[in-house]
Image (cartoon, rainbow, N blue to C red; front, side, top):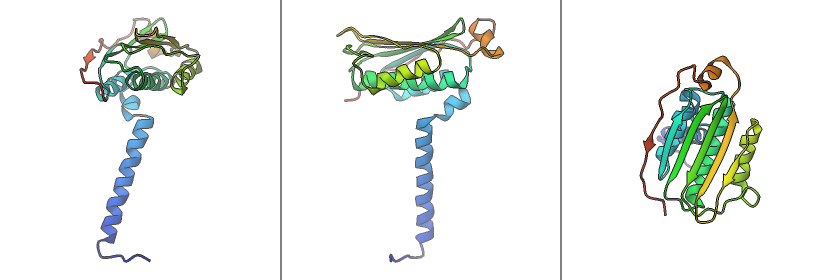
Length: 186
């Protein structure tokens, strides 16, 4: 049995607070609070600020259906991860646009190319699964030495607020241009 001194309750309390904070950070990584509170555009911009070499442009409504936002966010996160880890990209551009009831998502990098849905790993397959889960599709164009372009159109559920926004009758948020120039992590 271990010896406990008079500081044991305080030490236990500090350790508990650290564990709670670690769980909060883990949960935020699973579903970031900014995605829930502020939507896809804000969440992608926050993600880009943590990543290297990313430019984001978006012309989308403030909010889209929750399932569309979540799948588009995690697909983008995976594409950014692939571009940095595997493609050796020095620049990554994320573009989001909403037209005719469709969210058009595109992630393009200037890496080494050669990615393929047929021969790709679990990252590309999970991106394809996310797109098709909502009736969309994922296309990958990745000629050797010419970078990779991942495109995913997502149908947007026809709810009154999203319908008018995607058809241009609602208020679209102005395009967000957040250019970040960081060095590639070694």
